[in-house]
Every structure is written in structure tokens, then in C-alpha cells.
Image (cartoon, rainbow, N blue to C red):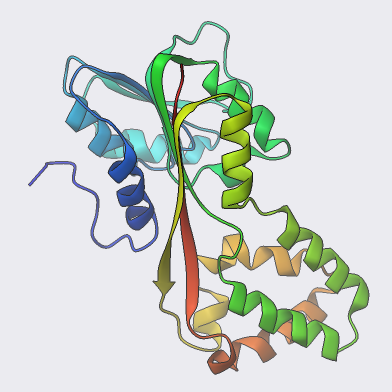
Length: 258
């Protein structure tokens, strides 16, 4: 078993990383840029596969995430470096890479996802491969429909309009294919796989690590009155049968630079 195998206990990052790895052409000695690397899933695994003749630069905008990844790394895998960088504004002296990856990354490309993607591709060597994953439009749709019904029933029209704008802004597989085609990449692959997320009612839903601090925050941000937002979300959370199962769509986009 690899020393830096994908952690089995991570039921969010690991399934997406597995999807990424299934489409990534990986071999020892390559140079690789991993964007939105978080605390190192799958950067550690990638570095182990490339070996000491390879090089991995893993970047994240969060200094806390970078510090956590470096603490996990210690003195291991010296050809892997974690750096605090904004993927939307990479330094001009950054070298070109054989591979560019990003697990659960595309949602961080805002406000102009295509421009961010075009910037990344400019750091890809000719003949290099790009592989990114993200939860695509349609993720947790059953929950969003249930929230929408609650907003409508309670007469929160302004908040409902804001909510629909949030939903429409989420990237889709169709968007991903259009971006790769516009960048004239070759051997394009864009595919989705469902991932069911288990969650109980009430506070278990409202404090779920994949929802609060992420997806559910979009709902709360639609409200100026946070007490009203909490009342909406408590009513929804206490009625889980109306939105079960919770399905995320793992989307992978991959292509090769001519």
C-alpha cells in the first residue's frame, strides 16, 4: 500500500480524487502543478507516484491550509512543495508543467472561471495534460428544490431571487466542455459520476461539514435577516424525507494541450 495513499476516512475529497486519478496520465519524473490543493489530497499521493525525479508544486490561497499540509509533510517527499498562491494570478516566473491538476477546484475559479482556466493552461507544456474535478451543477438538487419550496411558501421572494442566482452561477459539465473546446485542447473528456452523501435530520444536516461552511452558506447569504434564514433551514432540516437521497455530481474535465 502506498505510504501516502488517499485517506479512506475522507468521504468527500477522496472520491473526487479517485475520479481525477482515473483520468490522469501519471508516470515518474513528470512535473505537476496541483491547484487549490487544500491539505494535500491528492498532492501527497501524486508526489509519491512521480518519485524523486519528478516535481510537484501544490498551491492554495489559504495560508492555513498550506501550513497544515506542510506540517503533515514534515521532511518527507522533498520534491513536493506547498505554496500560498492565487491560481488566478500566478507569478510570471513559474515554470511550465507536464501536468496540471486540481481536485474540487473549479468552484474557486470565480469570478471568471474561463479566464482562470485559460491562465492555468498557459502554464501547461505543449503535449501536457490538464485534469480538474468539481461538484457540478445539479449537486444536491433535491435539497435546493426543497429549500426553494420553503422560500416560496413563506413569501421570501427577494431571497428566492438571490437563491436562484446562486444556483445558476454554479459550473456545469456543459460549461466545462465549452471551456476546453474554446481553449482548443485535444482528447477532451468531461464526465459526471453520482456520489450519495449520507446525512441525518436537524442539526446533523445544518452542521454537516460538506454543507455548512460551503453549500448551505449560499442560502444564508441570501438573507439580510439571519433569524429568518435559520427558521427556513430548521424547517427544511427537520423534513429530510423530502430531499433524500442527497446526491453530489462528481465532474471531471480533462484535456491535452496541442
